[in-house]
Image (tube, helix red, strand yellow):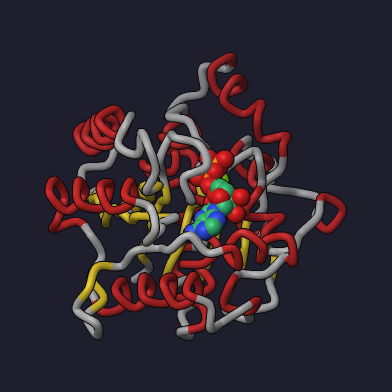
Length: 261
Ligand SMILES: Nc1ncnc2c1ncn2[C@@H]1O[C@H](COP(=O)(O)OP(=O)(O)OP(=O)(O)O)[C@@H](O)[C@H]1O
Ligand SMILES: [Mg+2]
């Protein structure tokens, strides 16, 4: 059975793409068959894995408008069990097209496309854009669960109520089995009191939804780590760029906690 996990938070720059790439890669290194679907027009997950515009002709936009099947846009990566369905800035028009054409069942298009290939993967990770429009709705409608990265900085929890309401609404109307897989504190800095405060707030409100690393019996927290910021410019997940870095270890812990749950 494959598990479909959306990474979502309408706040920009909180670590969605970093989480999508590195969770996908860590699961792939654990010998799981993983597909990373990039449905953000910024295409950061695609470029972060080393693909440039000229490397692929078709992308998830063509899948969503029905011109290509998902299997026709999937690319292989340097990890043999990690595949990616790339995105492209052209995807920016898709929401307007859905709206203009009054496309029927537009919330469920991605889900339908995933159905065709789902059996070939153990995990499908979806990286979504920083918005709560129809692209993110498609991701949440297709997913079994959602991981919400929370940047351990000022205003971390701002907008969270809106996101949680959206998840609730989708659960009620389109996808009754959608679960919150967990909240993932990102860019945590031990020198920063604000980081500690954000983590304390998360623990107070969502303790049961934090990821637990069973080995160390501690919560999974992604540290602020320059290696995580550098690795996309080399087109590599952290596990292939600096496996011993704290960022790499943290994402491996996240993958482990998902594998044992
Ligand atoms: N743990 C970390 N340590 C250091 N830098 C990080 C970390 N996580 C993410 N970054 C950097 O912070 C920036 C934002 O991260 P990322 O692109 O993953 O966020 P995002 O939520 O996907 O953004 P967007 O909303 O634009 O899609 C990037 O430059 C990334 O390299
Ligand atoms: Mg992103």
